[in-house]
Length: 217
Image (cartoon, rainbow, N blue to C red; front, side):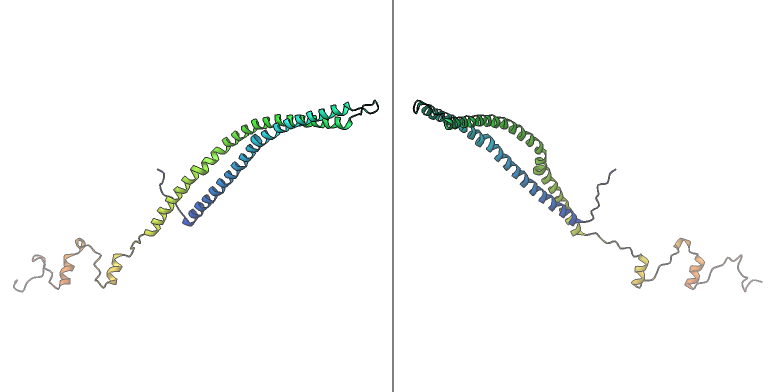
């Protein structure tokens, strides 16, 4: 049958363990809170800021392309001495606007892909960290409560103290109090002759076996 007793060498060690668990719980919850904050910022940046920024850049690039085409068309309409200008600068501006449009469109698609991947990663992270979070928020406080009950019981036990047992022999106690020591021989084993002699009386003898009397012839 298993024993229900535990050998406790140091109550202070249990208090130290309890304090360490409290510090660990506080640090872990603080770290989880910081991670949640950073993840929230990242999700908000991708799903809101970037998703709003790059579509706006696409619209702006279309406006720049339209403006560059108008400028190029106007420049080509001008002729000097029957010669049309090369319009190199205007063509470069139009090409640059078209490149910006392509970049913005690529970014929009990239952000959309990242939004889908980010949602998957966040869900996977929450699943992996869920057990640890439950351990910190539920199991660890329960363990600390168990230590509290244990410390209360140990404090109550040490307050009562262990009773001291008197191991002094009774004979020694009798001597210390000046009382006569009793005969170690039981009364049943004593001889009646020795008792009579001790009392100062004569030992009666059998007339048949005893000495002759004075009146006997």
